Length: 107
Length: 120
Image (cartoon, rainbow over the protein chains, first blue to last red):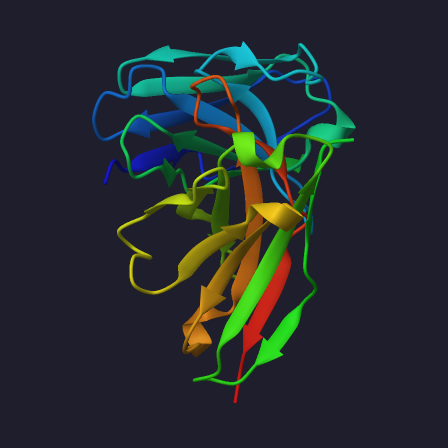
């Protein structure tokens, strides 16, 4: 299986901050990467796919970039509703895997 | 409205069998893959497998192959996840989710989750 490692595991930030989360794959995944947001007690929500394509209805403050093995999710100006856990998922291989998650907390 | 609605929470004993469901509506159920994702308490997401309801083509994660069975009944737009003999370690939230149709294997629509508790 391709291992997905997110960093940091958690972070504290203030409203208005720029936040960056990194996802590293154990081998190249050719932009076959999605990002999800999960709030407590709720199902995950798709934010981006193909590394940088914004899912319909997702605010433009979310963006994704990267290539090869290294990818980032950026929130340009953190809003109160963005405090949540974020997961990356690779779908390059036939056995899809998620990162362990990054919890974004209020500073 | 496109949605997936899952069956309710279950409490079972070790060794018992269980089948949970995921009903799709608002779209052509037979034209989209449906996947299952496990989330153990306080932990991350794990992909279990997917099924194409149109022809019941099914793929499993190696970690879950032989541990669960995924099926679908296209006549009632419902996918299933079942266990023949539950273990305490199967205690988790289980989500069904629809795969995007355009070649990107990301899950765009999610069910609300079914909590399965296995305890003696």
